[in-house]
Length: 290
Image (cartoon, rainbow, N blue to C red; front, side, top):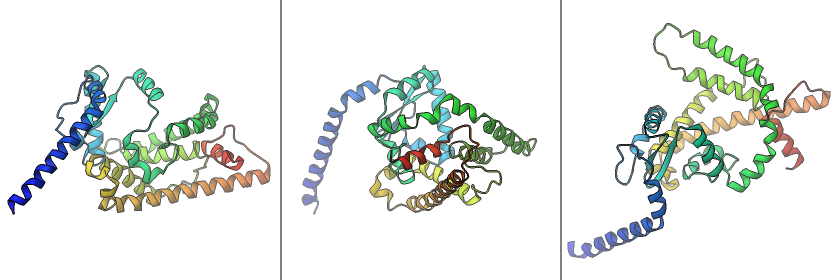
């Protein structure tokens, strides 16, 4: 029995060595260039720093701060390795500007977001991004941003008042405050939805969003779940699907609400807006067939 197994084992080992050799040869220039950048400590063979990314969003946040400090000490850039893939961590704004305007192809890790964001603008290819980004330019002008200032000021005041309730109580987690304030700000600016009654963002949505964010961080840290084949059989897949379904439901509610408001405004032939919201521009482009 052992004799019959030995040749198969040897063949498998030889094939693995050949695959690794071909892989290294193909990526030699990439690896040589990446080696010129300082590497974060505690890198392990094969998996790199992936074990540092496991454990959910809190651990990912703590490790992000650790890497940021290391990048600062290394001169503004440092490398962490997700298996064979290098992730260059930059904390200099000028360097980040150069990279963001040069490296337009989406990273391998964006595929983790497909189940949540789909093949939309955030995860699209370069050609689609360039074309649609130009169509959206009007919503990012300085005039539009100036029109948002009253909303920013009001939301900042509300955030301060809400966090004041926890003042003097010792350590507390500000995440819930920030998350709710950010969602309300996005709805009022990017979506153009009034939240005077705060009814659009319910507790179910807030919980689902937190689960989706944490689930994405967990999948990022568990390298075996980067495989779509293995991921579809995991318990995390079911949890993420349920959370994303709630998030998408809220998105549809916001979209339908804004469509109804636009229809009512057109019927009344009135408009009090001094700026065009991101969602309004998307709906205009959709109506025009752009």
